[in-house]
Image (cartoon, rainbow, N blue to C red; front, side, top):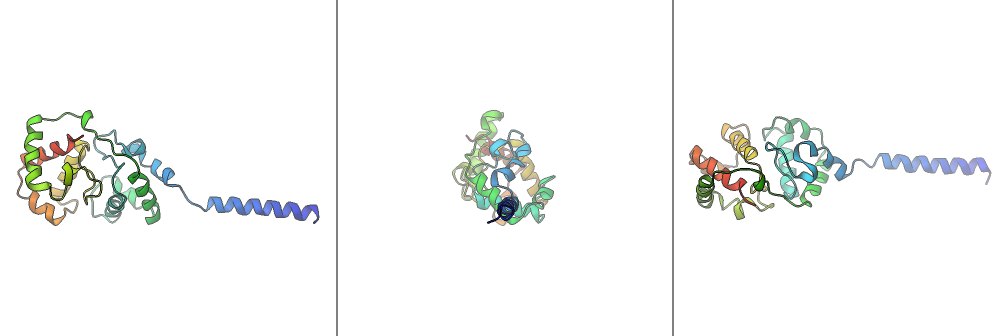
Length: 194
């Protein structure tokens, strides 16, 4: 085979290989890096307005991203961000974060011990059926509530109560019967969990 044909075959193969690598798309970790500014490295939030997303179930993360994407869940930034991802990219990020361990923020925040104690009673009576094991199970429909930042829980509940985010029907029936003080107590209870 003449040298020119060999070179052409070699460079053609290199170009083909290079173009297939360019078309592969972003990896899960590359996509997840875009979340670190708000949700922290490896999904462990260091800012009180954003939740820790590491350790939540992949199904829950996908569901929440769809709610943001289609406007069913209120957020100042996430509604716009979610629209920029394909379903495949959301699934990659969801699987990535689901595989990481959750880390509680309880030791990094202060609580009113009387409210935490009162919140435990509110939890047992009103929340335990859906938010099993003090809100710590990643496979619950609500994700992980235990050990999240208290301000994040407060902002989320305020959005539910104001109708900016759609509250599940079962939850709405319970929340409507609770006073502001009871709601604050149960949020402090969830946030205080290690």
